[in-house]
Image (tube, rainbow, N blue to C red; front, side, top):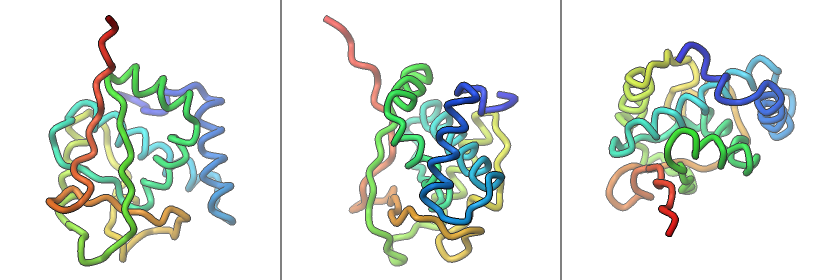
Length: 156
């Protein structure tokens, strides 16, 4: 996909980027755009590779949170991509962090046809910017499990 932002209308994209800025005082418009763009890549990749254990970086998770807050836009996006990607938040815990999850996630995003903004896909101690989101995702036994899209229910 040439530009993942085309998954949304320009107004939808701007509204979600504005939510990121509103939740992160002082964040530049450019940084919010980068974060939302990576969140869209993440959701698209998870729908294409639902069985791979993935998780967003904490910075990208901020964009995913903003996207989810726009429920109608998010539900429509997931439906068009083929499955609803549920969010299973956990409180951050450095001892639970799996450093390989970001490597796997970046690989899945690239397999989905997207390039990644490497600066936004770092572990919790190397984040490019501090964000309001205070959750993490643990795709390991005992954690919340893999983040997988739920298929659209079949109508009777």
